[in-house]
Image (cartoon, rainbow, N blue to C red; front, side, top):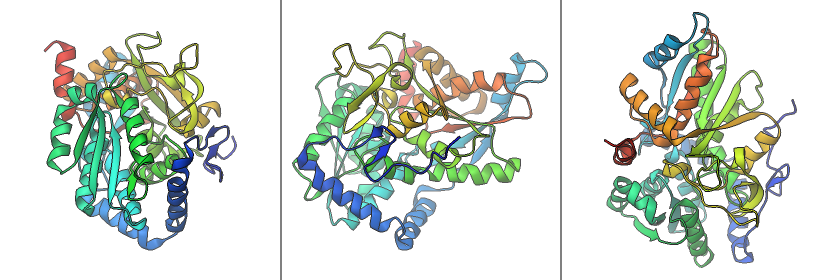
Length: 405
């Protein structure tokens, strides 16, 4: 297999995917961001500051934990030779409760380098909004977060947290009132405020250089996993599983392993309630190439090419597109992408809570659900790592409602 890590190119392309499809009013801001990032890419002072904050503020490295009771659960239904050992990469233990803080700390440092005083963000599950508000408070930046009103309802705890951190939460009541619509409004804001505002985009989506920048800040997850598995197993893991919405937690853990074809990489999208358009959020499994929020990737579209409505029990996966590097990995047959239904994700949510005493984010529960299936078919000598991308405090009320409790 050809080397896949040497992307994007100078035009921000991952083969045919990626690029910069934005109004001319945003080009200057994107060029400034691109040039600033190019200057700090080999700047040891910047990365030393970033890594120090990850250690002392975020709490990294996050642990790699053996999920012994989850493994035992799989082995109960498998034969004597099958049932891989399951490990959890505990991003839920990072400050603010998810992987999102890795990226927001990095982009807040970039905001300072560009001399800007205000940041904006979009959020679905609220974790990126909380992480952005947290970084803004740490660096003394003004912060506005756009959030769909449906997600405000589902993620009320995170709305309260953002406001306590000093951010203004701007509720978006257009369209499906979820992440796509929040992103639309954040992009409109940025077009009118680029002189003093940086848009801390929360995932590996959007126009170049955002997919590359977010991936680079998040690949601390995969770098740590590589070191931890080398120490624990004396080799790489056999399989890594992560949920995929926009795709930042998956890109972060997959990227350092992307050229090691001995490691099976599996991304899990939101299968919702059925395969019908509007009932799921699985663009890699069910979509076609199209342009959304500034880049070319797989998008869920209707017969007229209009972005389709989506559904997931998880607010963080409720998005009709995906990062262009994931599209690249899919077409290169390097990463497998599957989908998991709401019902199976909710079952996994409950199982992890009761088997390991860990309440996962509903996003992460999708990865857990499919990992159980994979582990049952793998030999007992194998090791499977799940990226537990976030904790489930934010989801307990919605999960209880959906489970009828």
